[in-house]
Amino acid sequence: MERLILNNLKAVIFDFDGVISDSEPSHFAATNKTVEKFSVQLDRNQYYSEFLGYTDFQMFQAINEKYSLGLNDSEIEKLIEQKAIFFEQIIRQADHLIKGIPQFIKMLKTGGIKIGIYSGASSDDIELMLENSGFREFFDVIVSADDVEKGKPDPEGYIKALNNINEKFDTKILPSQCIVIEDSHWGIAAAKKAGMKIIGVTNSYPANELEDADLIINSVSDLTISDLNRLCQE
Image (tube, rainbow, N blue to C red; front, side, top):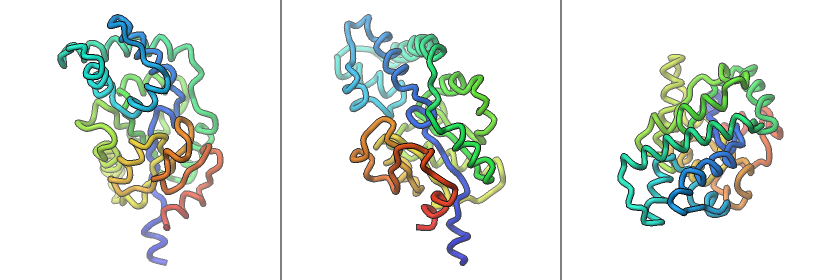
């Protein structure tokens, strides 16, 4: 009985792009619009296989190296600013909340579960996409690319998100009492290193690319609080 209490679900931390918001197509379009002046255009498969899960800085660094653009850090920062402008223009015209997410978040909140976000997106992008969604207030903490030194697959962001929850509510939630919901192998690797339970959702990649997750699903609509509690008891 003591083990059951210890491992009971206390928190859920979401990745954002590809889990809460289907914003990756908009990020992809904004990225290509940003780099077109260098006569560079990424195809969709390349973007998803090579750059998904990166922070914007990591992504433009990789593009800079791959295409020998010769950009310094200051010039990369300018690309990030340009991309943010393009992204805002595109996302404001998109219906991007993933099906089932609103109901799932409400279920967690009703169950008294602490809810956080850790994303490789910028804080401005996350706030923009949550704007007018009616769900911003449901998230107890948000950790973005602006808040970490190392992006996924480094565990820094997930560790920080749980620490922020514990500080905000004066709790001592353990990593084993926290479930991460991710859509990429980078994020799964980060959460695993943080010692958390992981649900992989096949919104961006097929199940065989998420095999390191503790549970793989097609939609959060398939989950109940009992499912989540059982996962934390394993």
